[in-house]
Length: 116
Length: 114
Image 1 (cartoon, helix red, strand yellow):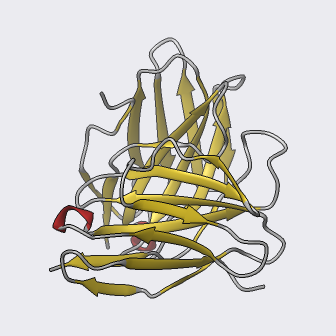
Image 2 (image 1 turned 135 degrees about the horizontal axis):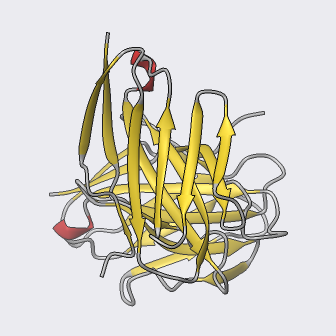
């Protein structure tokens, strides 16, 4: 059973370009979460999605950032018109079912975004 | 305002000794706490958790203690092994929040010396 997969592992973009980060949850998991880790900081929650639904996007910047989790295919975190401050590690996590707030999340290896 | 704080950015211990990692929180609504371990270039992996109805949870070499009145939790690793060297994150979630919306501390880098 493959774990959470993220690609690309490393992404370099110039200011003003778009970045697309992909996350394939573990088999059987229908809940996906995105976190961002800036250097020397902890993980900051960005968004929580179920298939075709955004459940909580309270951690997402209001502009330039969007996320989706379509019925088929991976979850996508999209950053438009990237700026240097977007440089960070972006982690995706998945869980099987929210029956309580105590579901364990399984993290992917992350995508390291560098904006030149 | 950081709601989950790990005040020690780093900790170094000798192999075989006890490692104690600390975490403080400010939000009284938090009632579920987790510890994650992270190696370089990898995602965090779940280590151990504790609900606020308990004050201790143990799993092998790892024990988490929760002091609700002090809003403090700690992770004890005994005996420490070189393979435990990693960054440890404390995380918390609370009533009214989704499970996915855990609030993380900034991490403590543990180094276990042979």
